Amino acid sequence: MAKRAHLRMAAMKDDLIAAVIRKLPDTNKEFSGAARESWLAMMRNTFAMTYGAVAESEAPAPFVVSPVAAAAPPVRYTIAQDGFAYGDGKPIDASDIVPGSVVHDYRGQPVDPEMDPILWRSHGALPARLPRGVRLVPADDLAEAGP
Image (cartoon, rainbow, N blue to C red; front, top):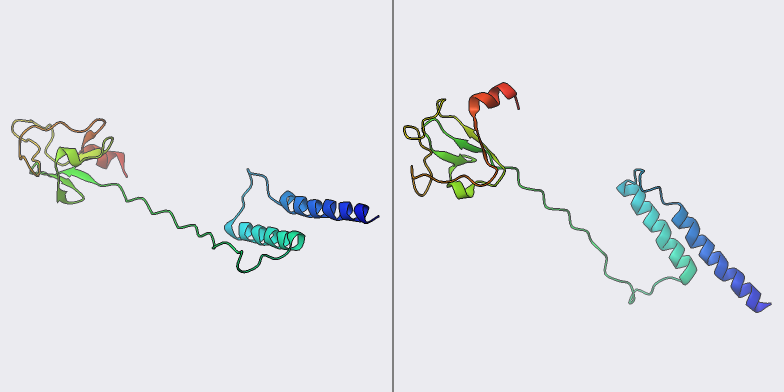
């Protein structure tokens, strides 16, 4: 008889944990931070009821999730009317431009590379190859396209 009662208690414990797990929403549904904390508290209480409270000496250190560092805003690359190259208003070299970026060209159009060269921070008007995928776009075209 004691063995049967023990088996019934074990099954009830399993059912209790299973019931809390069934409370989880489908993965395609919203599960807000407050709802997650509430569910985790319910699961902690269920484990405490099922397995007994954890002694303070056994308790693990709290798990802290640090916020993800915000990505730095993209740099605004420009070629000023006088030909100087800038990244967020600071002089740059071609190698400072992130591949795939857009460079806003404020020089008069059409540009004659011999008469209106791009002037780089460390080597002036010497020709420099732009990184792969960088687009040099006349500022007039950007104004027409909008933000």
